[in-house]
Image 1 (cartoon, one colour):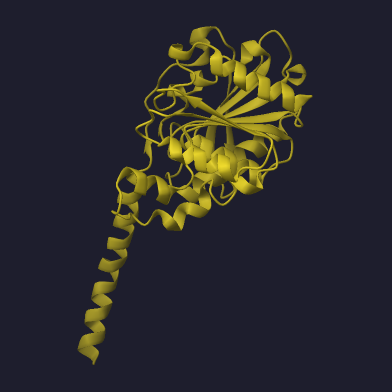
Image 2 (cartoon, rainbow, N blue to C red; image 1 turned 180 degrees about the vertical axis):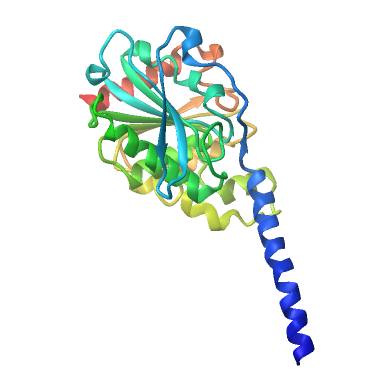
Amino acid sequence: MAKQAASGAATLPAAVFHYYFLIDTMYKRIFYPDNIPGTTPERFGLDYENVYFSSEDGTRLNGWFLPAVNVNPKDAKGTVIHMHSNSGNISSHWHFAGWLPDQGYNVFAFDYRGFGKSRGRAEPKGILEDAVAAINYVRSRTDIDPGKIFIYGQSLGGTLAIAAATLNPEGIKAVVTEAAFYSYSLLADDRRPGEGYGYEQDDIYSAGPYVSKLPVPILIIHGDGDSITPYSQSERLFAEANEPKQLELIKYGRHMDAMTERYGDHFQKKIMALFESALS
């Protein structure tokens, strides 16, 4: 008996190690963060403030605040929180929302844990907490109107935008998603059917459980040629979302294609129309 107990005790650390190895491998298939410096707003003649704030568990996060052009931040039309995709860092994504200051909107872009200069390790629960914390941070700024907040999320950021806005809706006027996915497990199944990576445990940190409870207008944008996040994911989000809601198809559009030169300002105008409608 003593020999069997000793054997079991010896195998326990190996089993625990194997579990965490599998979890780490699984998350590396979702998140591709880096801290490689890219471009800053300053390079394009835009002012910005480098800030740090904390997530719910104390993880230190990094963000950039870009004030609206030619107007005090408090007098801006609103403040847009940009939530980026699952790779890189804010320096490689902020430009997707970099046109908004010229339209009279402040922009707050930030990195989730494990991305850029943010501390911690990327994982679904913590990243959703980071998105909620970003809303809290923006709302706490005394130089903006906390009742005029918008969220624009792309890919992973679109999923987080829906969940975070539902969990923390005060002051949020509208949400825009582009190439968002419904849930981690559904995305994994779309990419590699039947392989079952066990993402179901993380679905509670994705858009699926929240989209039907989102209390503000939503504009969903997606390309039908998206090979990374299938268009069907946004169709499902749209089907479960409450009115008022809009689904904008990017004909032959690829992943996160809406803000590229290929479509000019077509989708920018769609976003502006939603924001103006929400403000009125």
